[in-house]
Length: 469
Ligand code: FAD
Image (cartoon, rainbow, N blue to C red; front, side, top):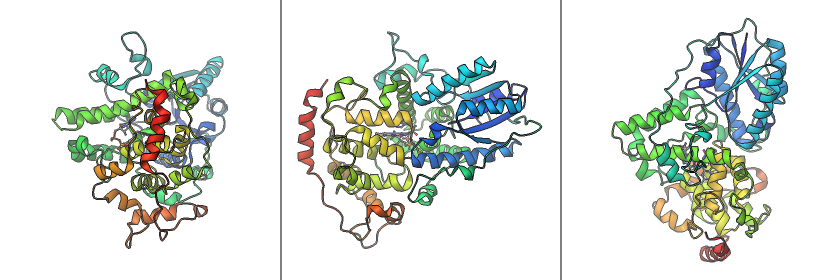
């Protein structure tokens, strides 16, 4: 009997327990991607990037004599149709952990069970399933370091190579055309520019990993805080769509560590921040839309997105070069350096006293590595309302951060054109990417500060007084 392999955020062939199980089932395998409501409501840049990933997966499957069937609609209804059309008896998928996906998957599983269809969910999106990592008291980790200590020495399953053969059915069910899905429809801005920065698909993700472990992991720890240096792996983009498994990265990091490469241990630690974020979203799903710590509910955040300082933040016009460079970097490339993410988030939530949710949703719209768990944790951690949060008094000063981490102004000059006689290509691309209604030009004068940094810091410290732990 045929089996359905429902791909979602696991768009690869290797280290893929669900696909391996489907291929070992003995029946023909029908790979499917469903453009359902969850895909439909994903932020503009991430949805566009998802489309690029689907295209790459479809090609890899074709090279194996298989095919990716594309269907649009409610996931359960599509699966029911496919079961009827193909006579499939089992559906395999890789588990996801954010509240919307869990709700959908639980409903699908129980409906399929009622139809006597087996639904088999597999690991693959994480290194450690959230229910397998517990504190001594049987709870989950709310602080990162003890979690790292608990998992760092754990045995993990062996790696799985891509199936050598994906058994094909005699005839394929009909499929939509990817182009008809118009997955970049909501970009309403320089989609082609953002696309040109993407490194798409499993093969590219694997090369990215090997080039990182061969050339950059050695200096990762010292250089990762400097946004003008290409020091990180940049694998978040590929992890988001599952073009590479965290397991593949983990083993590569461990090999580098065993070869004595400095920086490897630190890299593995960062990968476990992603696990930490996922365990938190699993155990405390409210992290995606409410203050993780309830006492923050009456904090006097600004929630009005129309305020001019919020607009200035989104548009990279705050007059703080570090903040503006970072916001423009995200707009053009779809990603932002980790230190820059912390600085722009701190500036918005502390200097501008604006709710983290406003920033989190803007990131969701602009990032091509948007991840529901890491984004929510990153914002709440920086704002102070989240688990293992930055202390209330840590208000990054974007000017001194510039002096420290962008001493020569390379990052600033890469992204800010105003006031320069010969602006960088990237800085000019920003003006091609933004919507006309923003009414910005590279010939404008660079804006003055929208808030005095000391005043903003003082105001935030006063407001934060009542929220110390
Ligand atoms: P590397 O430094 O090479 O690290 C390797 C991997 O470890 C990353 O690919 C990522 O999967 C993981 N990792 C590293 N740092 C973190 C972290 N702080 N939290 C969770 N995982 C981490 N990351 C996303 O993937 N998607 C998001 O939407 C996202 N939003 C963020 C929002 C804010 C406000 C902040 C402060 C951080 C956010 N992060 C997010 C985390 C982090 O900034 C990115 O994972 C990192 O910049 C990715 O670059 P890299 O792949 O070169 O990472």
